[in-house]
Length: 142
Image (cartoon, rainbow, N blue to C red; front, side):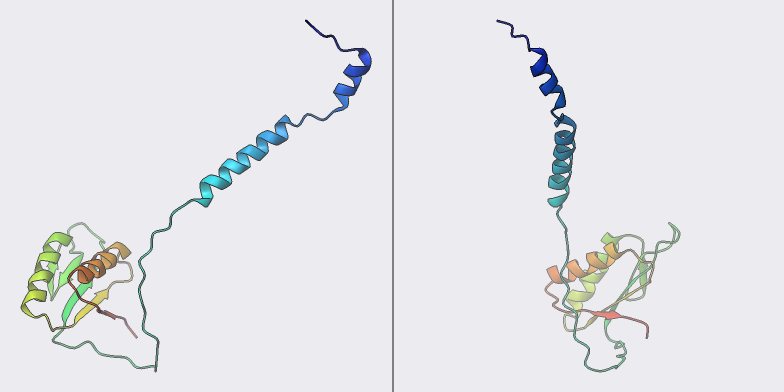
C-alpha cells in the first residue's frame, strides 16, 4: 500500500532540518577521538639523582668507559668500549661483556656525543641492567 502525502504534510516535512550531515560529522569526530585516545606510549624510567651541591665529579681512570659517537659517516665507529672503537653493537657488547666479567667491581662510565642517537644509550643501559649492574655514571661536560 502506497501512501501519498498531502500537500500540507509535504510542506511540514520540508520545514524539518536534515540532520544527516551533522550526524556524519559527529561520527567522524567520534571515530577520530577513539583512535587517538588509545595510543600507547613506551617509556624507560630512569631515576636521576637529586643534586646536593654544585660539584663536578671526575670519572675514575679505573672505570670501564663506553663512548657513544654520532654516526656522521658510515666508516666511523659509533661505539667505543675502553678506548677500542666498534662499528656495530654486537662487537661492542661482546667486548663489554668480557670487561664486566674480568672486573665486576669496576664502575661503568657512559660518555656520549650530543648528536649520538638515544637508541644507543638505551641499548647500553638495558644491557647493563640485564647484567645486574644497578648503576652507571653518565659523563657530562660542565
